[in-house]
Length: 226
Length: 219
Image (cartoon, rainbow over all chains, first blue to last red; front, side, top):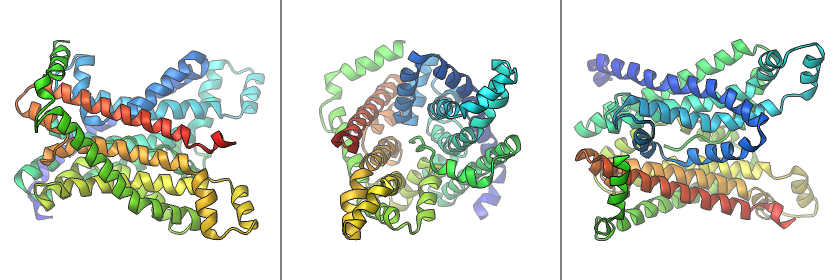
């Protein structure tokens, strides 16, 4: 605890950089997954390559991906953008198949009813299909949020500041308290971001009961590897 | 693009493959770490997961462990254990086992739980003991899910073994961190491509095993 209070300003800076690296991929994987999943459901031949691609992306370890990305997207080797793009890819690898499934499992009677009431296809998608698939999307986004916050720390070995810098500096200086602080704060931040996603889901989807969310969460796929 | 060509040139250089610090040895180490870490995790997590899945006891705890593990930063665990156990393989190996456990546990208990209830009731009605119900019905029916858990665990350990080179263990991560220290991006890239290739080969292999062990094949 003494270590934490003596270094509060530095830890605060790392916390802010950590959030700046973690939030864009979480938001982007949600925002991009919806149109990609919609397209995968509409265009038949796109499904297989998208699902295979998502599965393979999931298998790639994060540190090698951070290092390979610069030659694909033309950034420099230590650009924070590499972390953001890599984590967005992981988020999409989880969200796209899940969103496509969620959209396809919407009760067709509800869609027919909307159509019969004269909804245009855009309005039907935004006000009927998407909200009904909402609980699945929230469950997936929770997994993405938690694993993204945790994976940001890996960038520290490349010199990209985050709470992970507490691990690398703590290891180099032999300060156990610094590493423990980093682990506790990373886990706490992951749980906090998870809680924000749950709260957002409750506000946007007020009809979903907590009991149902629990069940959906239990059946979500495995998280990405380090 | 130049870096990519340099990376492939680095990989194509036969002097980088042989010797005690060559790619061959490091690749062997990487695989050995992964197999050992996952095997140890299986010894602990498979019986525990089967028991949880069969009895339904401590299910909340098992779900909590396998879900909560996502939040645990692997680099934090690797550096912490690296300091606590000093230079050597014990620290990284403990980290591999801890990180492989949740996936294997989830695969074991969800596999047993996913077995068709009618098949389980039928086995019990035909006079099987609880042990027979578990080993002859629930485990075979849930086997692909268990293999899926072991697959995730394996990929997790391959990724973590790369990071473990940061605290002085062997494996392919050695080349990566050596390249980082000497600002040799081509070598970092070559090492990363090797790890990615290894992960993809393992993933595809396990996907095949999952298909082969699916009970649907025997119907």
